[in-house]
Length: 207
Image (cartoon, rainbow, N blue to C red):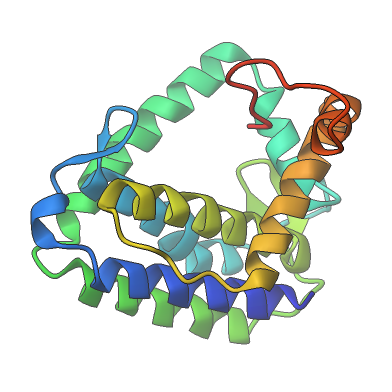
């Protein structure tokens, strides 16, 4: 799969979804304690707005050798750090959601353009500084596609509006989720569940 193409296709699908969300649904339920507007704000912040910022920050060395290790590193972080990061993420989601204004589709389209424009100037092997450490662009960007696919689906469910994700983007996100499970030691359980040989525990997650 071409990681650049899957990112662009997921970003376009997310922007299209936002353009079809009824305005009266924005302040309704989104995900957990977030409203739908908060959820859109988080998706914009994590998967679009930060792309030009991260691509512009060079890392001195490679620390994270693959996208699955990005999520595995976050999962293995100390509980206090994870809690602080989640609190900051929620505050940012609400602030970004408010900043999308009354025409969120226009704002999202602008962020998509900025992100894809920055990506066009980046090389696959460029080392960039991420929260988990230095990563190659070709390894980091799939983590942003994952955010778009997962949270785009969350937003579609909350809004009651379908999202048109390409098969390649869905396949990339699903494969990454499986690789994260393997990286954190849950690979055998996931494989048995996917092949009808076992069941996953309630509220199982690779994140």
